[in-house]
Amino acid sequence: MVVGYGQHEHFLASDLPALLPETRSEMALPLIVGERVLGVFDVQSEAVNRFTEEDLRVQTTLAGQVAVALQNANLMTGQPETAGLAGLPLWP
Image (cartoon, rainbow, N blue to C red; front, side, top):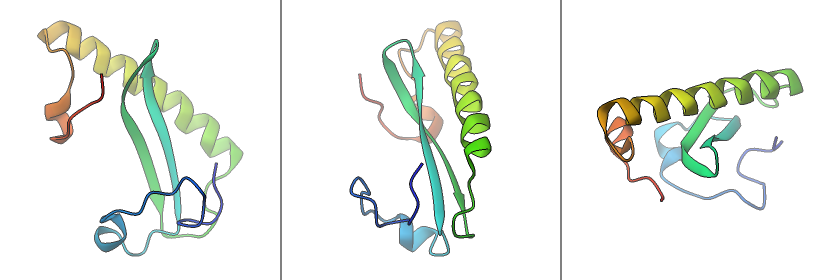
């Protein structure tokens, strides 16, 4: 978990601040099944230091369940990935 939105060494500047200018806290968790990253589960808040270790545990569990659901949906539809879900390409 990173404290200090936009100040961490791994922060990537993007158009996000223009889209959500009031964001003060962010938790981004990978959606992983096996060794494959399907996407990112991103939670934001307007409150500084909003997220706790308990929030991290809960959101990590949720991200794992979402990743499995995406993988199952891919298997059911025969799609190699769910890029159309967000309109963005996914990495192999």
